[in-house]
Amino acid sequence: MNWPEHGSNPHYLYEALNKEFPDNRVDFSANINPLGPPPLIKENWNSLLSTISDYPDPNGIELRKRIAKTEGLDENQVLIGNGGAEMISLIGRLLTGQRALIVQPAFSEYEQACRVNGAIVDYHQLTSGSWDLDLESLHKKLRDTDAVFICNPSNPTGVYYSKPVLMELLFACRENNCLLIIDEAFYDFIYYYESLVEYIEEFPNLLIIRSMTKMYAMPGLRLGYLLADARVIERVAKFQPQWSMNAIALKAGEWCLESEIYRKETINLIVQERKRLFAFYHGVQFNVSPSETNFYLLKDPVLDDQIPLFRFLLDKGIVPRHTMNFPGLEGKWLRFAIKAPVENDRLMEAIVEWRNNHSSSL
Ligand SMILES: Cc1ncc(COP(=O)(O)O)c(C=O)c1O
Image (spheres, rainbow, N blue to C red):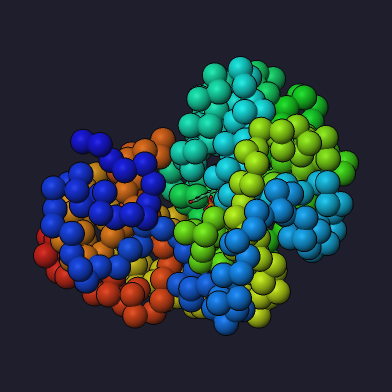
């Protein structure tokens, strides 16, 4: 069967499984802020209409300046794009014909972007359960690679790798003349997250990808950026199509940067809900990944392959993210976004029903 490559757009999933698409559904397969877009965007939405009658600034200079200021960087160390996904794609161009090492399981676009550009891809496969980075064995592979991709906090596990651990990796990458690409698409859901941004000046081999579509709930609008040494930014920018970011996204991005209270409210909600969900899963003897962000992996330990549970939930209009295309997971876990309390309640009720019908083998 042809499993959809990403979460969201669940009609493709129901279609692939030949299931009726339920009206009353909750989509847990995309990790988007359950509070929706920030109030500043909602309140000022009508004013955005006037921006579409002219070409957007191809450099997004206003937003670029603001991001640079927020991050303590120079504006030529920032590149804005059409979502984090565009940044990954542009980095793929940079790696044409080179060797890339991907810390797996990981977002599938890293491999895709490398392969279409003829890069040779190798994996550093983490052990399921803890998903520890295992730096010793990772370091040994650096001699044979030009770039390492790592997602922090990791999609799909939600595991957070601390600053000292990533610093060690950054030093090792520099010694081995290789790039370290850290995808921080979900960094802003962790209030104690410590980025390596301050090392960009000192380490021209460090590239940091950010997405504004998750925390600010605007995946349909598209906005992301890359932070790196000015020379790297200049090279990557040459691959970017003209007017890649639309005028609405550029303006909305400025409001997102002013939405710090909303971001804090979001984190509080996620932390509370994660506690509640994890206590529940513990009670019903399900396994969860040690996530510190707004999604997690889940499995019923009674099953090796989670497809029966997956189908059961889909029939109830609850849409998990399958893990068929995550190397090392391959259907042995399901991924869920942390959503609003009422939606998480609905998921927990369904799990209770599943458990009541499938507890005999425990
Ligand atoms: C780890 C990771 N990086 C980057 C992206 C791309 O995000 P966007 O292009 O919406 O900014 C995603 C989207 O799901 C993701 O999960």
